[in-house]
Image 1 (cartoon, rainbow, N blue to C red):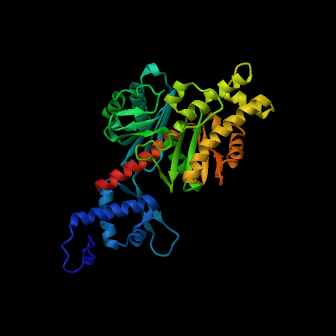
Image 2: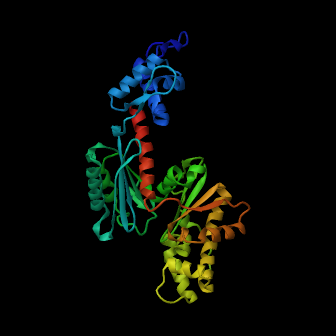
Length: 397
């Protein structure tokens, strides 16, 4: 075979474009190295179906272009030692930024997924997300030893849903700057046109898929219960965003709650969030007669200690969350539900939700507390950014 594998062309067919064939061969091999590396030329020939000479030419081109590098020799097998190839990590860099309601977190990784720098800082609305985000990006680039211009992909996580038509972030009443296109335009102007805006809980679900309990399951949902309520959904291993990017906005489920609600709050935040957020739990505890300085942690601790009033508040919360999860179960039938947030992670809460759920739906998925810490959203940014960078890289070859 020659280097373009052209002799397999059917008789009478138009000649293949050698440049295109070389690009296709390189793209195929780069994907195999990405999935299986470090890997030898012989193994690449076996996996790809290409001849060894064709593989050799393609590897030389990819190494020349700075995409692959030698990764040592494989010894201990019959025959001469085989040279191994792996992706050159410096072929691309990804920046992930989590623009939360009260914090900013970020990290930089290389194309292999190795985190080179990470940082976080508190955020005050009066500081303005744009300036603080760009400052954090600069700080991370310096710590990673790169120029900001070397970033191949930037992923920014925000609450709510980004609408590319209006260039606004929708469904995020507590997120400063969501009502102005200047935030997104400023980020893309400063960080580059490859900047992608994603929902924070979608990215937390991606992180759970790649690094947490989701590694063991194909279909699961990540349910966040804290100051806000939301969900990220993974179906057959892929993040499900929905037609408008609003899949998982369970805060707007029309849940009927025994708790008194503020009508304007329910309209702005959704009925479930108005009924089941941390603020609603505190309000219910006060109305039930719990005194003293209250916090979600104290309420759950009092319930665990046997306080009947606190136990009733927790049971009410568990039933509200179970109703929301029940609506997901009956439509999606996930294998697993991962709970995050201060309420979702509270001691005894998954068990209370499981018990309530059993009275509502015909099948009950496994419920687990998230295995990830507060950096889950940034980890999801890097995971999503790595996928985007690879798609762009493979498309450019």
